[in-house]
Image 1 (cartoon, rainbow, N blue to C red):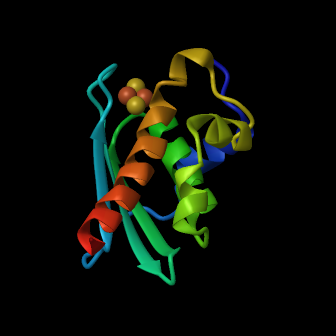
Image 2 (image 1 turned 180 degrees about the vertical axis):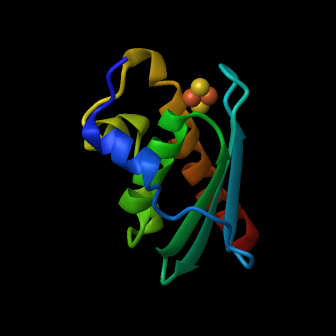
Image 3 (image 1 turned 135 degrees about the vertical axis):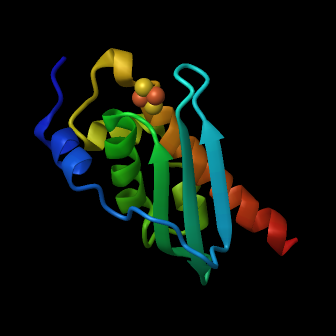
Length: 123
Ligand code: FES
């Protein structure tokens, strides 16, 4: 299986790993295909994602895609971040092997869930 240099880079040096203690929103999802799990934490200010971190019990592709997702989402408005798809993330990484595309679902889903969690709390 061939991974792009960017995937390998994000796997070896994942960005924004960790947990935000006083997060404004948290999204936790599981991957039905493999059973891996992922959580994304966000801090929101002026309707923008000011800080974002993630924790995963998942494969290398899940780590790399989530790392890239957090990079894409940081600084974006919540509406912009809601439009980030797994395809955007895979494209930004220079592609993923087809059998690994399901891994990138986790990141986008967890991000969207964290935003919905934040919005739900505000109501
Ligand atoms: Fe589970 Fe990749 S194999 S997320």
